[in-house]
Image 1 (cartoon, protein in one colour):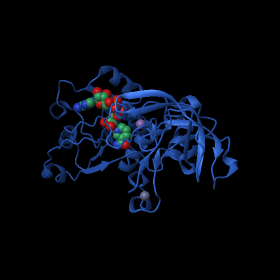
Image 2 (cartoon, helix red, strand yellow):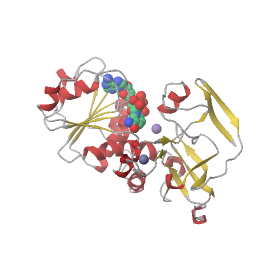
Image 3 (cartoon, rainbow, N blue to C red):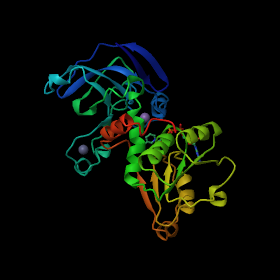
Length: 302
Ligand code: NAI
Ligand code: MN
Ligand code: ZN
């Protein structure tokens, strides 16, 4: 089979590899679609601290089960599946409290294990999630990025009273916007980015108002008082600004992994009783997102 392999940072090769055999509790997926994430580029360029090399990258993919290992029912052969990249142990504290995405022995397909930029991949059977016929191969690999939006939004429990502000209209911001608009039906969505082309996409994906903040500070110019803020731009300076512009009782959701320190003032957080959520990958959100896509709730334009 052919596989896209990052041999070491900055060295990408298209390699001929033997087709793998599924191990115990594993299925082999003949891959039909895979999408490129910003983090694939980071692994390529050596900027992902978790990656081990050489690595077949790709954690957003789907396909058909064409072989099963020991302990797996043969009935699964031929199933069309999207692959959840989160591999967890099932018995540590995070796993037992519903957060397998931060399992103490977490590993991620396409980061710690070989991933989906290949003709075949073997994955734990639990991670291969059944797709309905209504989701074609052409979009099935995009279930995973929508699980990121689903995970952060699900924690923040948006309601129809919420005025949401999303920093960053890249793929992550856009999936969050679709989820807030079409699943939670929030009152208003404001998208903030520095690139006009991306703000146009934000509008197409469900934002009511878009703001280019390249040359302005939101603390001085924002007319709304957001009650729910998601940082999908992930610059370390954003949390501080979000705290200033947030309504009392607002929730702030963070997706970033920056290791640059940010200075915060306790009083500004506590006096408004703000809640700060963080979200990493997804905790069993595949079935929910698959349902949303098949109902036409997300993965659509307005
Ligand atoms: P992206 O780079 O395509 O999008 C980020 C957007 O933010 C860009 O359009 C950029 O112009 C904008 N931006 C940058 N600084 C800004 C600022 N100060 N104010 C407003 N907008 C600003 O990235 P993508 O793929 O959408 O991912 C976004 C972030 O989410 C990345 O940092 C990534 O590491 C993180 N991420 C986190 C995950 C998690 O599970 N926590 C999963 C996937 C991505
Ligand atoms: Mn991704
Ligand atoms: Zn665990």
